[in-house]
Image 1 (tube, rainbow, N blue to C red):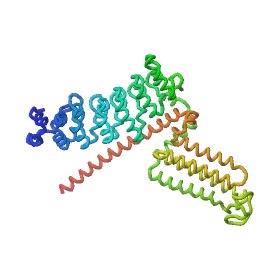
Image 2 (image 1 turned 90 degrees about the vertical axis):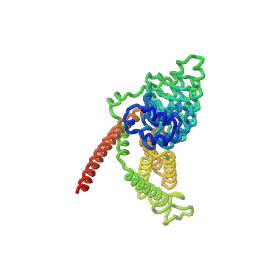
Image 3 (image 1 turned 60 degrees about the horizontal axis):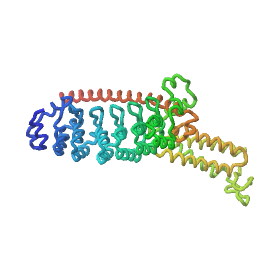
Image 4 (image 1 turned 30 degrees about the horizontal axis):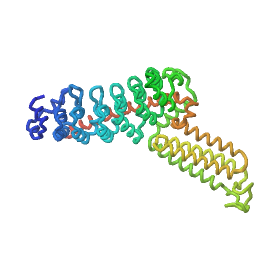
Length: 462
């Protein structure tokens, strides 16, 4: 690049930059180059940097010969205000991958600039998912470099945004952040991670858990580490069940529960939002009608003085239904079945909602209320059997239709690892289908655009 242009960008004079009239298009064609934006950002010339970024937004994602973007360059030089102005103008600059796919978020996590770390997370929440070429998240980088304050900020962000799935990610060696913290003997960080991670017994590519790594540390270092891990329920790899390999899973016979999971995934992915909403409305109406039928049964219930709420008649005791069993039994059979199916359908349809767990609990308590009311008004007979069967159906719905993480006992009993693998295999079909649909739509839009341009040219010529 011309030295005069370099001097002008370093000085930060906007008027001189326009007088120079640089060929920005030619500069943009060079694969790796220090653009005028690199020079202005490195020199802390904020106003000129914003001006250049407005004229040529692609410069913000351009890498120089060192594999650095303009935002990387400003960070390395310590120009904090320039960095803040740049990300305010374009927050996606935080996700620009430099050399070894290191983003500005990874850089501030490594250098422990917690103020900018918080600004970056707030400006671009999706940047927390970016990985380096080693498969490391910003949290991996902070733990690897023993940056406790950055770990606190990142964990706080994950907790407040309900994004703890990031804690499950592994680097190129299969190490979670807990593996890294244990191997570098960072006891305080290990204690923090244990409180936030659901599974502390993940294995790396060498088949080692965090406790295995702690056992391999020198005795004076590992004593307290092993005590903390064991008190949190950590285990060695030899005491855990053998991992289910994809090849073994695909070569084995498909069980009934796995078929149910396949049906569940296919049904969920095949439902549009309109169909889901329509089914939800119908299910709520059925649940409401059937519950009301229990509260106000045909013929009413007996009162303490021998009268009924609606018709005259007798009963076995106060509060029981008036209708004879031969008439009331079929009503309650069908009513209870409809109620249970509708409740199960509601649980199924709201499974992907962030409020699914509280709603499921409310539905279970509503089911218990239904059963208690049924026990109160139903004549002596097979009431207990009906209650057990109906409750079991609801539990099975909650268990299979996406709530496996909430039922650890059933998860162990029915082979959660195989069911999770089955879900991933079935979902891969839909991911491929979505890619094909996007490709077809892209080709259709290109064809439509070409036809439109041709038609426009024809009309213009005439």
